[in-house]
Image: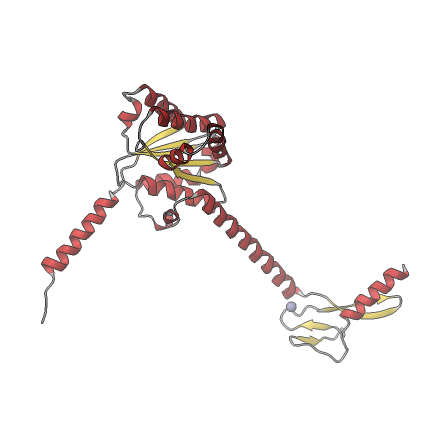
Length: 286
Ligand SMILES: [Zn+2]
């Protein structure tokens, strides 16, 4: 008890303020205690230790609010770091980082993708994947990247990669490492694989593609695949090995045609417009 008393006494001594000392931002109120000029709450209180009354510092509302603000800033900082690490781990191509709904031109495809994100919990629960198919330049990859970015912003780990890269990496591995590599995809609640159908279609490649998709199927987790193949090519392939891949894929993913407003075509149009303006229309005044 005496020990505790002397500890408290020492603490009080340390926090004690001289009676005449009035720190900036405070004033002495009628109760004899210093108060905060901003919130009017006392910034000191009386502490009775063994019959001696000490004036010790305490925190006012401003201090409390500042502490909360700092905690919130710290929480947000950690959250931003976490999201940045999810991006670094999940989106391999840095130029995809800016492919977001906020930067997208609104059209039906983008709205569909936004709805997928807003109903993500249900999509995950029902294991609803997407097979985004459509011609070159329709923006399938862009849409997939928008979905990846939006979910990552909500702290959902997403891995976005493409078949060529996955097959390349697997090609350099021993078979037991390959299995581990594929099964590690299950750490991501959403897997997005870009560009099915552009890879060299050997027996080995098709086996690996089936293994990747089948692993996802067994893990009961959603998968988004983009492809230039048409729905006819997907639902009625000539080749048996392709048929096995596509039928499994169509079991897991709803095929959605991406129509887009052909981006490359648009870029081409913009060049034509510019040339038209510069070379044919402009009045050269001298
Ligand atoms: Zn205050």
